[in-house]
Image 1: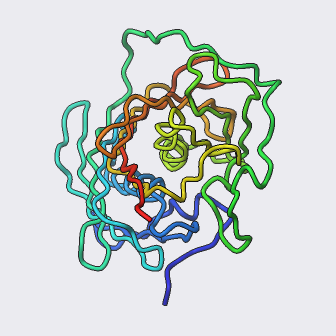
Image 2: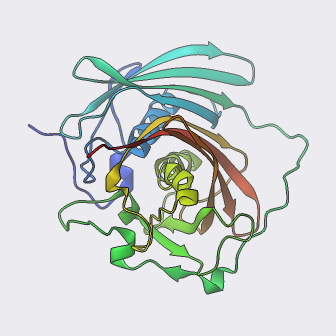
Image 3: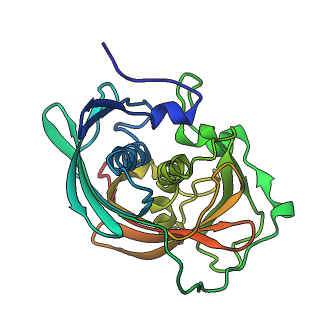
Length: 285
């Protein structure tokens, strides 16, 4: 029996079944790509690690490697290693397994709340009032109505002018279509889920590709896959309120692309930072 799920509530995708004390099982979802969406595995792995942290210690950083393609017709098993229980920090290592093989690994760190210095570089935001919702074709040019895409869980808006900080940025406003509970854990897990959307693609922008416009070059000539993904959570936020996700290309070389993402709330606070490297290989044909 397939464990693939087609649901409209993103919390269902991120809700895990506890199999044993440190072992969890999560559903998979077909999003129309050859493999499981990377953000799904990232969000589920963070959720699995968080379920083994008994104290009030939210995740502040997570570093992941994608090892194999995930099968969206099978569930994913998450094995959590309780690496460290410190006075203020907790460390976890998670291995995601399908068909007896690891497909993904995650190292995550959790910290008890503390007061300290506060600084961030000034963040320049575009005018939200000028932002426009994406049309259905822009949201997914090759969509099939029977498939739930990752972006379907979110309201997305883009500004007609280039991002004020970087003309090569792939940037957009995003929030969940549904209200979420107040529990901060689910907001971090959902942000991890959506953080995989667009980040690697921004490394293609300098080469004439566009994810939200039919005017760019076609990505059908490329094989794209995430290699690794890192996320740091800096400040509290809600993902059911508007966040601005600015994804900036850093480098493309050796058939790989590297990009950095900044997640900024409506008050200009930097709430999270992401970095991802991925495969960007031209398909011969």
